[in-house]
View: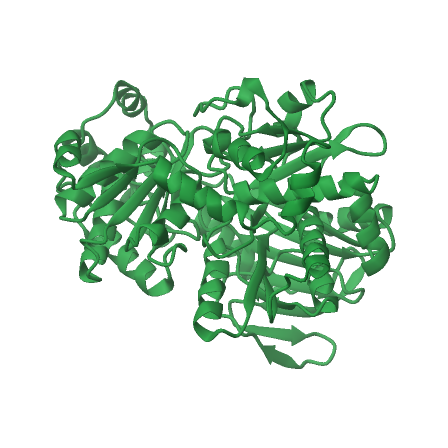
Length: 581
């Protein structure tokens, strides 16, 4: 098969010709399910181009796509191809015996894809550890180092809607693939013949021990590390019965371990939303299984009487969201940045109180995450490191600190509801975040406050910043080129003002420099190139524009400098008007 990475330079007729050849080869070589056959029997030319001309790519989170036939989607063949590419990379790195550990979430086909990956690895001579059922992404990250594996695979599409699935690849440090290994896997992914990938028999490989099934032993070790991150264990031990917690896994992988962690920590009153308790890849009670949207809390709100806080994980339990009643008595979800503010404020105060603050503490966050969190840390003599979006970059910093001994990792986060405390994992952990937000909520309640009151205290001490995000969905089937065109236009036609406020600086992470539009001076950035732009305005507000690496959307992050929430919302509206692509 011939896959076209960039269709923009070819006429439609040529693209369709190649796509039809791939379509014919796919139908001939790969066994289809009845659903796949119906899809291919009813496909038109546009659909053939969209699903068979190109090939799915590796982004910041590995592979992610709709579960459909064709090389640009998630299916058995693409999982096999990615796994063969990883297997060859592991073998070249001398990791056949140390092996690869595999986990999956609750999505449709996740278990099937994880078993396919296991048989491809086993056929290549690589030892496999496979979890006996779904597990949170952070436990997969932990398990790699716990089992001393060379790599790990997690079959998940995180918080995407039910038609999606994905495939994340991790290296021996527990973080997602570092650049050298990512390049090797990617190069092999594009060069291996997809129609001739060896697989072995799953049951035979389990019987022979080449595929080892794992479970409770790893769970216990993982939970022990999660519980060790509590900044004030005595607080929970002495007052664990004084707060009522309601938890929802949103039909995902957190359904056993999150409530278990809370109870083992000492929280006495933990309930689970029954309608969302069991794993279900159709996510029948929620349109988008993503705790950043208040709608994902609707089922919990129905049964929330008597509870202080609602905690939610996304389907692979690497993200965590929280909702509670505001001053109007209505449930409101905290934003990802607000959760980070509450957590870092609580961690700092708790560690200072009990004298457990490490030497040279450091916080690591993505460049599009809260500026106020940086200010809190700086005033408390905690060094802040900004990295690109993607938790693997935070994982790289943790590894750097361990090697150099220069800093002690205190907290890491992304505004997209991902948090980590401790170095036992190298990816965001919704389980430990659930424990910490429960602890922070308990601390607030003992002072007669809610987390909203805590936020007000933070704003009073450090000043108010409005921190928001939005996204623009790209409907063009050739969305990669469409997004590239938008970013090119923003670079070549730099906005002189946004929302009536003059632009002072433009930071282009692609060219690696910040340009002051007033003075004309430029400053080099301490980052490798990335397709991201930030516009800083005269009032110190800023807007960052970042195209997604895996989805047809452009994400925008607004940091609004203002005196109050109402003023920041007014400014936000004028900023959004400019970026209405």
